[in-house]
Length: 326
Image (cartoon, rainbow, N blue to C red):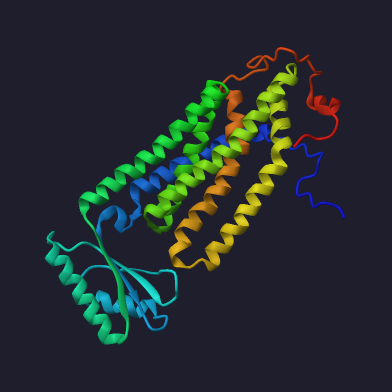
């Protein structure tokens, strides 16, 4: 029985020759994402803007539009509804009342409960949470700090693990991945909460994993084939790691696609962010991060092996090797 190979062993795609198109596309998408975030802004959830969260359990799955109309008629602000876990459990999020005291919060909650009980007798309310403005501001600061520290920490790791050029190229690629995710949420106005911050951090982790594998192969090949020109060497390295990149990305995308379709409303934002992050992370690893090394001046002598002899130059330099390396 032959093993399934999504990428043939002799794959020799010229990724580097498209680097200027890739750089232009990356710059345009990044600017568009920044403009979307600046103009439309993010639809921040209760975690970040503060407000009330009521978890209601109905006897049977309710029509969310009817529940929303019932709450909107009370004049307590625009309600955000999500099915939470089971189909008959609904998370109701409301903006904070004008008055900041606890009595105002309790009055809003009591009004919502009374109205829903009249319409849906027998339902129960399993949880009620309040997020104050002070707590939400702290969550914003912590979330932004977590993302920036992750990006800069990974860039520093690339610098010390390889050379400073690798750290810069990794920083540019990961910053692109994060901005693409933010731009997507600004465009779609999907709710941006702590779950999405967790998705962004997960995207950063996936991206660095993919980029480090390619960077390590580039460094290894630079020590083996010191006379090979950099565009050919980077193409060789990316093609050697391409089966691993494609297989990893496709399997993760299949799982995320299932979560996006059948995971329910509560996981939709997280799944969408992750799915987009995998796509842009794979693109930036192949077309942006590795090709950017050429513009940053990485050359054949950037790494010098002690005991390795020079190999013939040219795209077919890897012909001396026995079998493809994966």
